Length: 539
Ligand code: GLN
Image (cartoon, rainbow, N blue to C red):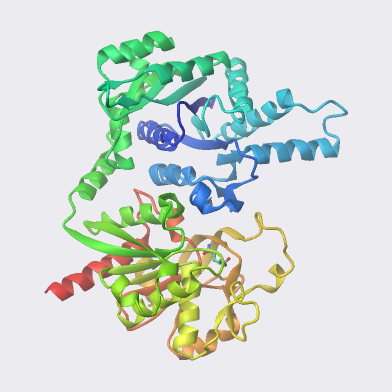
C-alpha cells in the first residue's frame, strides 16, 4: 500500500485549532473507508511534554505505549476511536536527541552534523515511520507552532524535501489561517493570510488548501480574492466558521467538502460519501439533553481550561448516553477547607477529584472527598484523587491522623501511599513514572464490575506513587473495597466504598480512553448515579 501524506501548517496566530481541523479531516476520510492516522510534530526542545507545567501547555496526554504527549493526540483518539502511540508525537528535543545519540555513536562517520540534512532527515524519518507500518493509507502530520517562527523552519524545509522526493500527487499541504474581522471597519481582512502564505512560499511551499478560521461567513468575492492572491483554485479555499462545539467541526468541514478536495488532490477515489450517522446521533443527543447535572471538578490547575482537557471531554461523552447536559463547576482545591466545604460543594450532584502532583491544594482535595463520602455524593477520584480518597479514609475512618502520601510528607508514620522500592533510587524527572497501559483484574460483584461489565480491563497510568499494600487488610476490615488489582504486581488499581451511591477511586487515568464512539464506563457510571440520586430527590 502506498501511503499518502498530508501536512497541516498554521499561520497568522497560534491556537487556531489545527488539531481539531486535522482530527475532523481524518474523521471524514475514515468514514469514507480510509485508514488514517494523525501525527503531531512539536517544535519545542523538551523531549516530551511530560516535564511541562500544565499551566503552560495544558494536559499531558498518555498513550497505551506510555508516551507522554501533546493534548492534541487526545483529540485524535476521541475523534477517530483509534489508539495513537509514541510515533504520533515527536518534538524537536526528541529529534535532536536521536541525532546527537547517533553522532556520539559515530554513525555519521566523521561528517559535520547539520540541520540540513541531518535534522531534516530525522524529521522525515519520523513521518515515514508511521507510513511504513503499512497500517495507514493516509498519514496526516500536524506541524505545531506558526509558519515564520524560527523553530518551525527545519520542519517546513523537511516538508518541502519530502514533497519533492515523494511526488506531488502523494504529499499535500493544508495551511490553516485566520481571517480577522475588524469591527470598526465592519470587514473581514485577508491581508494577514496573504502574508502568511507568502512566508510559506518563500520557504518553498505552495499550500494546496487554505482553511480559513473566521467569525463571519466568507463570501464568494472574498474567497476569490484569497484564491487569487494565494495561487489557489477557489474550491481550495475552505471556510472554517467558529463552531458551537469541537464536535461540530467534522460536519462543517463536510459541508465545505474539505475531504473531497483532499482526495481529488491526492488522486484517491472518493469511495462512499461519509454519512457520519453515529456522529450526528451523538451531536443531536448532546444538543437536546433531557436533564442537567452539575459536576464539581476539584483540582489545582482549574484556571486553565486545557489542564484537564480529557476529563472535560470524557464528561461530554458521558452526558450523551445519559441524555444529560453537564455543567462543570471548577473548584480550586486550595480554596476549599473544612469550614467552607459544604457551602462550596453544596450545589453539585457529583464530585471528581483530579490528578495532580505535589502538596499544594492536597488538604482541600481530602476535605472534598470526606464531604462526598459522608453526604453520599457520587464521587470519582482519579490518580491523585484516588490516593487522596485512601488518605481520607485512613485519617477519618481508621483514625491514623497523620496518614499521608510520602510524596507530600516523607516523614509520616503512615505512608498509606508510597513509592515502590525499585523507584526510590530514580532521580530523573522525565519519563520515569509508571506510564501507559497496564492490565487490571476486577473483583466480581463490585461497583467496578457493574460499571465496566467485565473483569479484565486495561487502563493508562501516569504516576510514581502507589497504594501501600501494608495497609490493605486494615482498610479492608474498616470497609474499603479493593476492587481492581494489577495481576502481575499486585498493586491496587481501584478502591471503592459500599453503602454509597457511587464512590470509586482509580489509580489510572480513565479520561484518556473516552471517545465519542465509546464514552468511558466510569464517567458514564458517575453521571448515571448522579442522575439517579437527583431524580430520587425530586420524586
Ligand atoms: N502525584 C501522584 C503520583 O505521582 C499522582 C499523579 C497523578 O495524579 N497523575 O503518584
